[in-house]
Figure 1 (cartoon, one colour):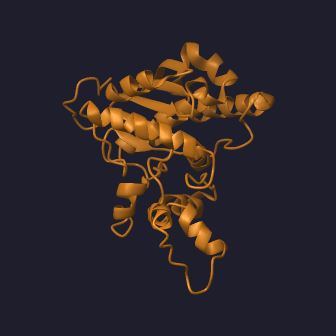
Figure 2: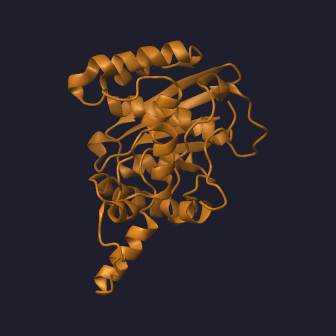
Figure 3: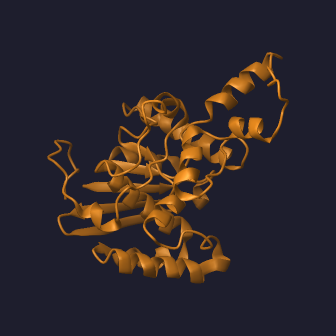
Length: 260
């Protein structure tokens, strides 16, 4: 099986893509690309058994409703007034609140943070995938699944913060060292250097590992009461297994390129 991880940014210069090939007792990073443009991202997803994308796949339903009402001059204010909780409900998706409760990590708000620019780019990528016959299930049921590397790393007991930006290369190297100890079956090969030099590349590898967990069904899934919101807002898949659990075998899958 080939899983792909995409650390998406607003521009290609900060976007990385990683490919991981899985076999019975081994996983091997076969390719890492930084400065990845939309064409490369689309082609990577189309060729993957499962692709983990580090970016919100949708906006909060309440926020969308608020914008539509605001455009028409018909915003209905709560009786208790416009306060912090009201704004929080507008700014956060259901999945953001679930991830915070499960992991203590606070995903960036796609409605109230600069990650909105990334989500706009992601929406364009998803539209191109649909045009090419690969419709995205924002709940993660198809090839694409939304991931959050910090939450995955925390679940796996690895360094999950403080490794971003060039000034923190020491922490990034600590993360790569920890990943090597926790997953000795993972071969970074010729791409270890770029993972140690680029947090985008390292996050892309983590996203590809999370995609494997999602393909095995070893991630959080929306409850029946959360499923409708997840369909439009997106759903962050958080691993429910250890790293070693990723080496479980897949059942037969007829799609080409799925098995190693």
